[in-house]
Length: 472
Image: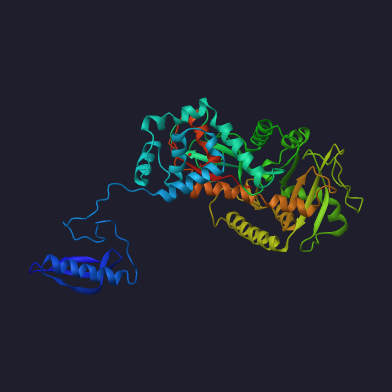
């Protein structure tokens, strides 16, 4: 509804709708030449806008007083009470109110609404109509977080919540990176492996979640830290914090190192990690000898794999047709489960065909590129590595899993389904990077960055940082 002054001083009363940045008149109600006519036309227009809706009047106050008339109500303040109450209720339900710090809670909840700096968070809170702490108090929140060890309090709350709604018998682990728009490295922010081939300083963030993706433990490492070196410290940190013994740790193939598996096993923990396809020829040597390259959709082979990649000790015996049954007392091997999928085979073949075409274009000189897969240099000239290509074709459709859980405790199907739950970790990272905006991060000291990443358990951090999932 709008009032539009006419040329003669009369006022047009119209019902209009805002479309594409302009007012579109839906109905002309009438033209008023004095205040009485204007009030009458405004009442008619309101009736057309809200037909059949009754109104409760305040004592002595008209529900729609004319401008300048007694009874007009001035709005002195406003607040988005419902949104704030919902966020506070969730914060409390998760147990994060164990951190008795209103300024910290306001920073966390304000960033859920809009990812911005500590200073600008005050604007967000003001726009919500929330009475907030002072700017200096907000700045001191990270110092208090360090001194009072908020990280442990939040981790305890996360553990209590996950234990109350499910179980933590199986935990999933993965890593991501946060890069900084900074020119120089320091003791924490280092140039390291980047999926996007960035040369910016970064940190490595490790996250342990329950089977539903709820965060349990988080840690950050130097940007040049190998991802295989992050798993055991995070798991041990989690175990010691909650005095836990046996549970299952699930991680992708990037964590498959002999040291990691040995340390987890020595600690009395079970593990399920993805295996690299290049290990299949050794693990499945007996199958290839007796059955050739033939696999059927959904086929599962339960066998063993050497604990140390450069030796065949612990591998299945190709002279024996039956696959060996792994037992915990086997010192030279782990249990390996291999599964074949027709759908995966189609996808793998498509990828290999594209890689082969690229390799042949490079060898023919049609494309100038770095050495791609399936190209080798012989006597100074590039040639197709036919043997590697044939070997890769032979293994399409296969996916492997390595574990120290006996088949009598966990059948192969459950091993595979547990591993596939890893998408929950990726979902948690994706949520922190998109919905909760892990970037940008406005911190540059080690303690501030560590505390900021720790807040990811309650909500994700900035010296302008962004995150990139590590390849799995």
